[in-house]
Image (cartoon, rainbow, N blue to C red; front, top):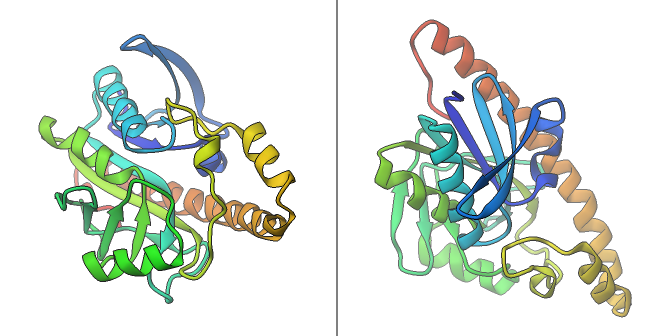
Length: 237
């Protein structure tokens, strides 16, 4: 069984990484999940938001019984030093809903999980409230799913939007089960030409982020695989 489970929101976040992995569609709790599997790791794209991440984490744990669960994907920068494509490996993840937090395996800095995609002002408020360097929507839910089972938890994220970039509203394109409906989003953007430049930039920056994330995760997995053969697993950094 794979030793490591990677939990992402959307396939585009990890597509370059899992391109040559084996795809498996499996049922869990009356839902279908698509997994990407290699010898030592399994990846699942559970959807956007905390509830979708929780379900995907639970499915990966129950079906593949990993030793380590890793939240992967995109983050927004909360500090000006972080640029598009930078990889963030935090030492702690905080849930902005109630302030609960989890220690990560390796890394440094704080990643905060928020309920919604936030604007520049919201990013500044989160940075101030939690001394965080980056924000996402799912890491806390993944940590919450791994913790009761005594599994190791880590997060590896790539910056897709910088501190002052305002992400176009996407909530109307997110379905109740956390899936992103591209058609709805395109319809929303089509009639709002003032958003076109931002959408083009977001697409370009997301592509850079997914490529950077794939490189980082591939290097980490290969290093851990080699270290495991020598019985000395390393931290996620």
